Length: 112
Image (cartoon, rainbow, N blue to C red; front, side, top):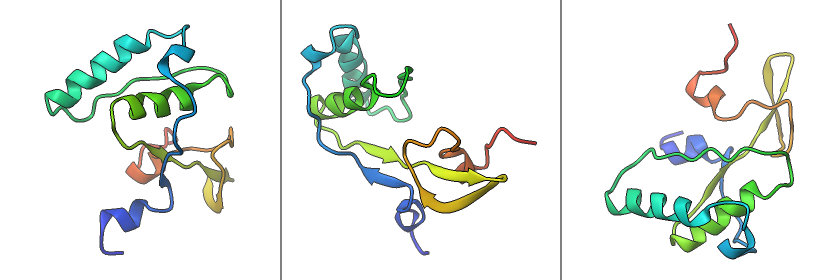
């Protein structure tokens, strides 16, 4: 491998297009999120994060896709990798509850 892109290609993919509008997330202050991210973009800030927490199927990914669309940004998704007996396997599954994500790439697995 010669580039960062080649290293990250197996776990990072461009997200699918959004299927909703921000108005379809009435339970979330999406305008506040959009304003916060927009201001970070305008100031050229990097590393700004928003934690979206909730059960599977509650719309976290769709909200992220919709925010990216509204802000005219590309969204990357981190693919999960199956962990068996403390080792990464070759299979990649974005819905695996036993997976550790980017922590393996940066060496922060939370295990001793």
